[in-house]
Image: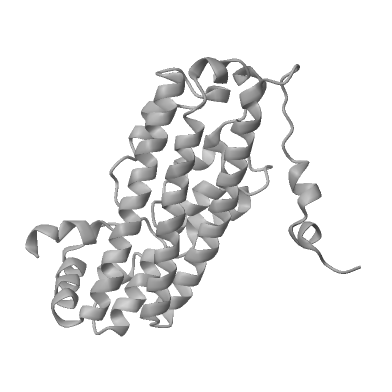
Amino acid sequence: MKTDYASYLKLRQLLDLQESRSDPAEHDELLFIVIHQVYELWFKQVLHELDKIKVDFTGNDLFGALATFKRVRMILKTLVGQLDVLETMTPMSFSAFRDRLDTASGFQSAQFRELEFVLGYKRPEVLRFLDPKWDGYERAARRLEEPSIIDHFYEFLEQRGVELPDSVRSRRGAPAEADESVQRALLRLYEEQPEVTLLLEMMADVDEGLQEWRYRHVKMIERTIGSKRGTGGSPGVEFLKRSLFNPIFPDLWAIRHEM
């Protein structure tokens, strides 16, 4: 049997995955399910792209990393755009089926935790929202321990002539931190290697894009449930606000006033 559009994309299986739990089905529950399933697909794609960027950095492939960061930036714009669709659902519409979520919560997205860890935003405490028996827990825990994209970026910098102190190199696998020696090196690259400047500015674009998504995501939740606890007793809006405006690449922001 030849492969056709439906079989290649496994559309029958895909379109059978949206099952409303309310009875009779609440109209907006389908939208809620579709949006969150699509988010998980985009998270999968972003992780795929970031793994490529790690290889690009280690291989000193400037333009490969630049092109892939650009794709990640466009995906982040799409994630923000999806919130516009989700916000067409009123708080009352959500309340009509919210209890059907039982203990389900976005805090349980193992892929989003993977995404944070890969980017160097490593908070071991967030693993408590994931049951070790759940699918994805082991991947998230592994990402917490392995080198982040920041570590691979440092490898790239060294191949560009940057001498990193042992204090930076020894942090491999640890949460990302700002460092004055890295900042001085970045300023030199801005002055001496204009082709690298394109990459650094695209990295800042991605950083800004993720911060934009976090902000819009928090405001969407605040608009929908206010100060209530999240589903399943998750912390809700106040916990999410703690991650607002925390940059992925802090060194790139720390040098803005010196340019």
